[in-house]
Amino acid sequence: MSKNITIIPPSEGRPDVLRVAAYCRVSTALEEQESSYASQIRSYTELISQHEGWELVDIYADKGITGTSMKKRVEFKKMIAACKRGKIDLILTKSLSRFARNTVDSLEVVRMLRANGIGVIFEKENINTLTESSEFLLTLFSGFAQAESESISKNVIWGIQKSREAGNVPFQYQKLLGYRRGLDGQPEVVPAEAEVVKRIYRRYLDGCSLCQIKRELEADGVPTASGIRSWTYQVIRNILTNERYIGDALLQKTYTTDCISKTVKKNQGDRPMVYVERNHPAIVSKVMFYQVREEMTRRSSKRKVMQKTGKTEQGKYSAKYALSELLVCGECGTPYKRCTWARNGKKRIVWRCVSRLEFGTKYCHDSPSMDEDKLHQAILEGINEFVQAGQGLGDELLDLASIVQQGGSADGIDPLTLRNRLDVLTAQQAELLDKVLEDMENEELNAQLKATMEEKQAILGRLGALQQDEEQRAGQEARLRELAEWLKQQKSEFTEYDDTITRRYVERITVVDAETIRIKFKYTDVEIDRTIRK
Image (cartoon, rainbow, N blue to C red; front, side, top):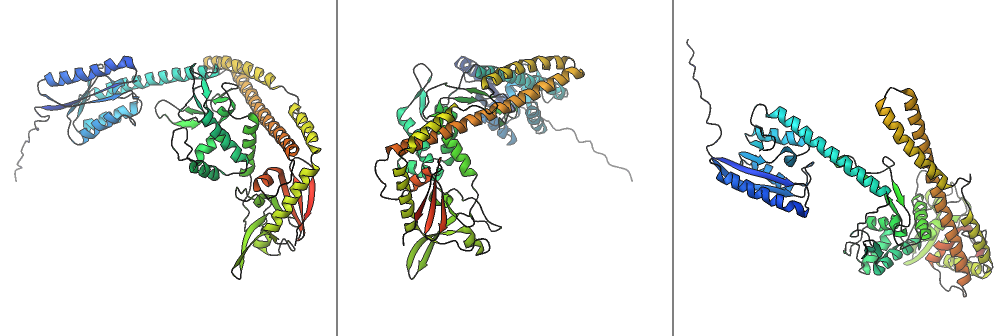
């Protein structure tokens, strides 16, 4: 049987009329580039309209958008979508750097377009992606474009770093409550907003949780820095932890990993950081700032009261009830918990030992239940007794505060000496690094570089420890002075129990037995026993 062979000729291929689009982009939105931007659009419109066999589809143009990523290039993505829908046959663009400076993105897009029969013409490089040699040339020139971006990025990062080291502090006024740009270009305090910042700090130190502060601000219609009247926990936390409010600035808190992925990471010591003191007017005192930081640490260290696996030793922090972390059992040391008893249609509020509630008499045998009203009355009487007896204690506390203020580091090392040594080591490190790069196999140079870096790291750790010690001393001094002033100002007895007063000045309340509690006051050795009235 003879075979029947038929030759099928190739199709006509590309249509007689090509649907052509153009893509143009300028790197920045600066005024001097506006003319270039408009000129590109006008030029491509005329070129496509006048070319025989070409039909203009659209001019796609991104202005002031980076070329290293396609995420924010709206017009570029719109053009690619049109290509996928079969609306475009050919794309014109000025150069590879205008199309994409990311080699991977550039090749992926071009290959996808070519697979769909769509070509891209790069005028500057004279490349048509539908030709056989285009793949090699495209890879080569894309690599050059990406290398250019990386070089520019490194130069920019170096410039930013040097600017930070020179003490130039950037301010994002739209996101920073309490400040605005002054006539001299420097930050100045906005009085009304500054009062909101102070209020947040005061309420936190009064024992309020972030949730309570949020509700109070929203109830009063207080706007955020952005002008909205809805607050988030993170915004409040950022205000409480931002060193800008004490007039200082920590720079390089975050950094961008590279110019391609643009991933932003928190600086955990990977890059140099710069701390600028007294850069602008403060809104809150350093003492209050350190007190808030210390209180945050104290609250986060609290463990939950309810634990099924064994006894608990610390009460959880409660912004609602001060006694949740202050009232402890004299027998087993476990915190007390607030409970509601209902009997014969009547409710009764009592405080009970958590260990006794959870495990019966396994760990605690005789802890009594305490009526809340009678407990509050006994605490109120104890605080009044402390105030009456503590008038002379105020001077002693002030003397102790002065001693704390004058205290230095345990080993007597001056932070300035450490910082000077750090500057020397940084210069040595840079010099050794240059030498090592010239002679990678030199073991002596590598050993010197390693030793320099280790000493530098040790000094950074020591400076951090000294900073922490300073903050703790400042907080302790502030608390002593605050208690001393409070004792001197109290001329009359309190008539009602107050959770805020109890939280601020009472360190611990121990249930000795069913009739006695022992109140230990903060920052003193004073303990007062009070009888629970029947």
